[in-house]
Structure formats: structure tokens, C-alpha cells
Length: 134
Image (cartoon, rainbow, N blue to C red):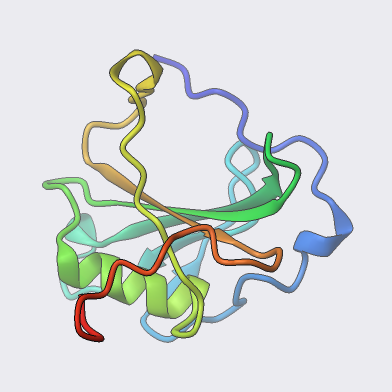
């Protein structure tokens, strides 16, 4: 299966959103997937975490970050998602993992998870905390 072209023209506001040299990762730009592809530094590189970062205006008219992460041998776990969120989205931003309607599933990689974060004001998620905690 051929991957769809992820990038086309990158809007100016996207530059500077993602780190050049994040701790624990090496940036490895790709001509098809885009300039913000990262590989975690691991003792066994074949098992490292791969991260792809993009940003664009979505159908709701707001600017969204999209960060996907994958591993060659398994689905990323909670610790992987926390690391990716901290490193590429930030501690103060809300990140969402979306489960679309079954008819809208797109699966181009069997071991990838995605996080989304809205850059434009307003919280896209209600406060689900109970007694101040989730």
C-alpha cells in the first residue's frame, strides 16, 4: 500500500511549532511525510518510537496539531503517549485521542496512535473531572 501524500504546501504559521532537537529524539525529515519526523534514541534502534508531526486548519476552521506515534513491533503504550504529548505538544496543552465512527476509520499503519491539540482558543473538551481529578 502506498502512503498518501501528507504534506503539500506548509503554511507559514506551522514553522516553529515543533522542536528541531527534542530531548531523546532525532529529527529525520522525509520528502513525502514532511519535515517534522522524529525517531527516538534507543539502545535498540529497530524498536524505537517514530513520531510524525503536522498542523493544519481542519474542517472546523481551527488550527490543529496532529502528532502520531508508532513502533515497529507493537502499539505505543501510555508511557509513549505521555512522552510524545510532553515533547511535541507541551504540558499545558490539552491533547485528544479520537475514536471516529466505524465508517470513518482510516488505518494506514497497524501500530500507530494519534494525538490532536487545538491551537485556537477555547477548550474543545468539557471538564470531565470528578472532585478535581480524572
